[in-house]
Length: 471
Ligand SMILES: Nc1ncnc2c1ncn2[C@@H]1O[C@H](COP(=O)(O)OP(=O)(O)OP(=O)(O)O)[C@@H](O)[C@H]1O
Ligand SMILES: [Mg+2]
Image 1 (cartoon, rainbow, N blue to C red):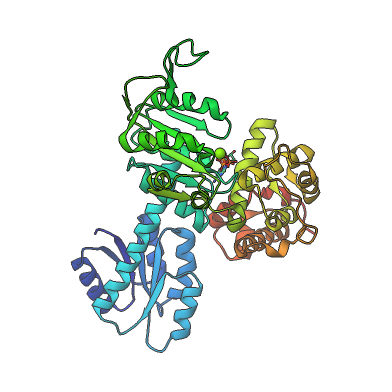
Image 2 (cartoon, rainbow, N blue to C red):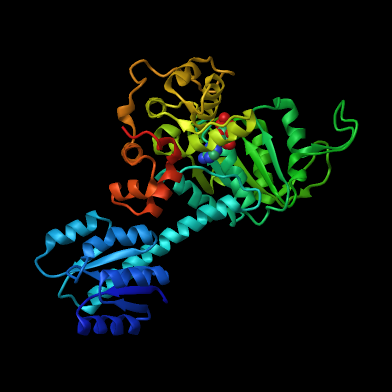
């Protein structure tokens, strides 16, 4: 196991007993007799878990929670309360303790609580590493989004990428089907092979067959030379069939054969060619419905939908907006040579109120238009009103005007956003009161200077702005 646990307990006999029991269970255990001593230990070495008593000489175990959080945010705290201190236990949880339990307790009980915490830490670490692996994988695009829905997408990509099965990516227009397909390929064993993409909707039906399967010289008028199709060009790699729903019915049997038998035939060709590719199909259409309408073959649909990754529309995961805005603003900064830092709260309210029929692509477009309208470093609501009012660039891109009733409805912002906003304005007012001196502002806010520093980075607040402002 090897997790590091720090026990803070003033009763020497009980402390020894705990250390002995935990060590016997395979945990690396250290101990301290007070919160002060415990903090010193935490400063010396990292711990996965702190197990602390409440009633201690000097600072209490409850006070310790926030101090530990500031010093070692990755360390979980479990509080052991004496009997009849339910309020204390509740306060502990409110202050960020991971768990608590009441004395007297059995060692089995203690072990269960610790194992549970350890397990959760494992899950958390796995998710974090999944995310960074996804970001750092060779050529894999960053998939921005922390919402439940996007986390599921990211997990699924990872699970499916290595399996070499056919993958079907579905989602409304602009939700990120191509980004997800790119990630599947980039994280697969085929990453070093080619990734060939065909947009089935963009190629005229009569040309699609030879585009996909190639043709022999002289196969038809105009076939002056042998031409390899996309299937052959993707040998050893992946083939993305984008807008699969637009695959004409007459080509579907040939596609089915390619998928089932891993063989294709060039147009006018006399012999089958073995293919070693993985197919990643994408569509914004409801294939089951197309099947019901006899516009898509059921057998092909079942073959292609072995693994399905459904990307939720942006309106169902608006909590991703702040991260996406940040992501696109930095892209826009590079593209347009700007130095945009963010959007005002009012503007963010506007973004939350919008329905985003064109999803992430629409958001990227709206931000770019707003950026063009802006003059300062921060995008304001008025810039967005203009951005929303711009006509869609192309039909079907899904850009729409926000309804008059929804515009400016900041109250629909998510709880997290609201909390972040509150945090930001508290920090700003503390800095203003303390003349921009971070140490003093941190003391006023009751957090450590290091914690304040982290929050300044997170919010992009420059404390220098507040010096010389004392009223
Ligand atoms: N989660 C995301 N993180 C970062 N960028 C994203 C994300 N989702 C989409 N994008 C960006 O939004 C734009 C649209 O994404 P993409 O082309 O993958 O959508 P799509 O689902 O294939 O759309 P369509 O159905 O219109 O083809 C791209 O610029 C892409 O980089
Ligand atoms: Mg696409």
